Image (cartoon, rainbow, N blue to C red; front, side, top):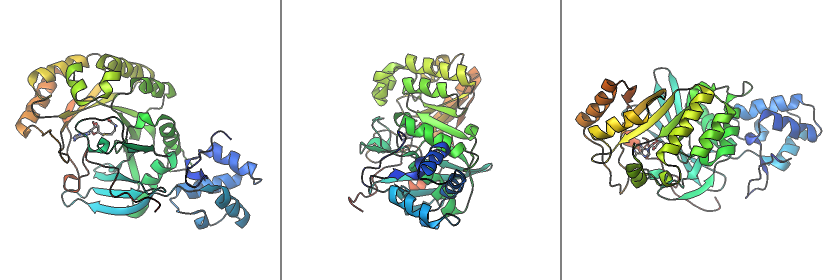
Length: 355
Ligand code: SAH
């Protein structure tokens, strides 16, 4: 079976990474009837930690599953709760001793979760903490799903929105992200609508086009942060490979296929990208696209050199864009006291090998 995901340390299939059809295939190959796959899939997506916790599954099937599969664990290592707004940050520990972070935010319309897609990140954005320790590995689809399931279980809530804006570059872990999207959207699982999911990217234009061709109605969120190549090159190395023109034409393609409005994230950095001329350039760049701009005063990171403009400048930038006719808002910062805001998540809380 080419879909088998080998997990290096255990050399077993992460069963939670399998789509329903893949699970059926596995269970039928093991000699059990198809309806057992329905039951196993149900248990896996209900947030159980071990095959032993599945109640209506025969002993033989459990033994076979334990023999050749495992559930890649996503276990709470630490939990932080913001005194300011109740935002929760989990530090999750993975099977190989790596750590990732996940944030759960409460909005009027329900709970939103910000999941990580990789351990670390290769993209090297100057303003982002998540990339400072480099890249370690991709997360399995089941490890991304596990963040949602375990957060729901620990907080006794139902998540209604997912943003892929945690640690890592989702489109650099493309196949696993597609599988994850199918898993969370499955009506037999937690059934979160694609329209309630945002995939954020620093601008891997080729993979934006690949994503468009899947035609899933997820919201594409582009971390733009600058409207000229000169400025973008200086803060986002990815721009050397996919410049603004390539990025914007991939966005136009995405929109032409999916019909979805695109979100552009623009972190305002004092003295770098926050002038009136920057606002005008941004407006002109997005002409002809159906979009919304989220302005985020840049969050401070450890040893970071960037600081946010004062609120007066932020307002001015926003108002200028709105006056030109742009759809634009300033995003509220959540979880500032627990380092849970955009760009503050890290992959190595404390790394111990072999635990
Ligand atoms: N790699 C993906 C998703 C992770 S980052 C991406 O680049 O989109 C989530 C968002 O936070 C991105 O828009 C990112 O550019 C932004 N971000 C990173 N560091 C930040 C900081 N210090 N302040 C504000 N936003 C930041």
